[in-house]
Length: 60
Image (cartoon, rainbow, N blue to C red; front, side, top):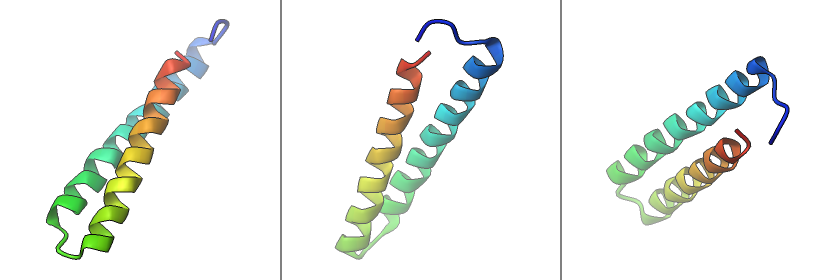
């Protein structure tokens, strides 16, 4: 995406980083779950967060 100011670039990068951190934490929670439904919920949320981070990074 052309024409981003430095402030916008930094904001998007920071938000994407937050999504990556969230995805890592959710994967960690999933690895510690014994209930298959909750584990699946955490894994899906982690995948969604990683996808969001990838989309945001694609804007840079």
